[in-house]
Length: 312
Image (cartoon, rainbow, N blue to C red):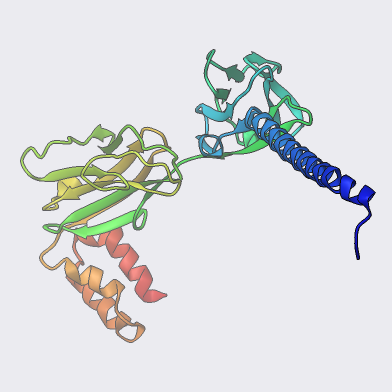
């Protein structure tokens, strides 16, 4: 179909207009994309400038009864915001920034200018101090992180019975352990009849060694609750003078004691053996023990215990 002279004249102008429109649409699309990137970038920049917690440095705490617990809250990009500590047991505001807002003199705040750590100190720990503590950043809305405080009291344990009966010439080994302590004791002392046992070998009769959870012959530090520090007392050759009360006294726990009875005689092992014999042979064993120890040794408490065990 032939074009009219007027349409032939308009075709070049129509092509130029289409090119202009296409270029304009592309420019507008590019501006939209750039604007979107700028908006997204501004959001990312705003988000990165917001304060946030460093959880690896704001961990739960286990404190020793009567000692001081330090709760840490590390915050990045604090800006003009403040950090507060709140006790959840009674929803009580304890600290704001570096200031303390409680009448409890055992509680205090600590913060060093320029530091990212906001500390809550609880002195002379009591059992009621255990529980959740909230570290709160004064953003809108507020950001919170919870730190749990556990209060433990170490326990001293001496392995074996409270009354130990041992033969002369035997080897006495006592082990004292400190349980549930978040920190190792500075020392563990042994006392024999209230006299401090020497920690040097001396004549080689009594040896005392102390080890921590990691071994190595000394008390070593640890972080996990339940890791045990133990002290071992060893008497190589037991004599009558080794009878008495042995007391284990750790630095951070109550002392524990055990009473050692040293049994003398030509065949003292018979008494220990009879305690482990069966019921059918108990009567015969008792008769033998009574005849053998019919001297003053029968009045020894160990002989009485054997006779009582046999009669029951």
